[in-house]
Image 1 (tube, rainbow, N blue to C red):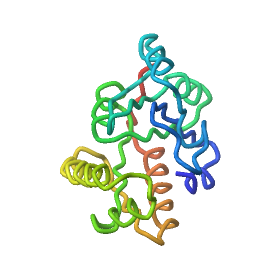
Image 2: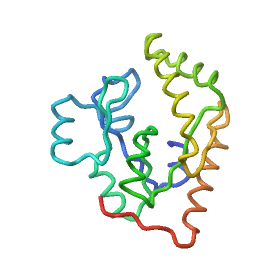
Image 3: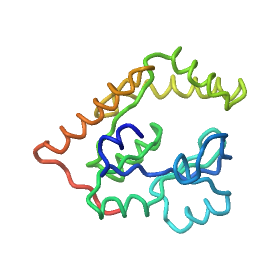
Length: 178
């Protein structure tokens, strides 16, 4: 996403809110909006989350304000959601484009997760099992992009091309207000 934003400065990446603790090297407001449960629950109760879910024992959600502001500014908006979140977005924003971003293989995904050293073995196994289940839902998406190790430019270029094609599409559906 960072590489795609370099190519398309008008692209707005919505930063997901989470109750998960910050990992080493992460930056609040860049990687996630890190917050306590009371703050997250206040957003939820106020209707200010477009979508939310319990993921690996922590709450995650898409703040509506970021989406509203970006769309009002005429920007394309990117949301990072899992398959459950994508299903919710299909219901709420039927004209939205859905791209499934995937590692080149399960083995490559496992290697990336292991090399991050952010989870114990049991949580790592849960992530891999979840990824396996999500792969079964790939057909629900409009496009798939393989983010292979060492091929960042290719993946960013494919995403860039998909966005160009979507802008050129006839009868492009408009999105409802958020």
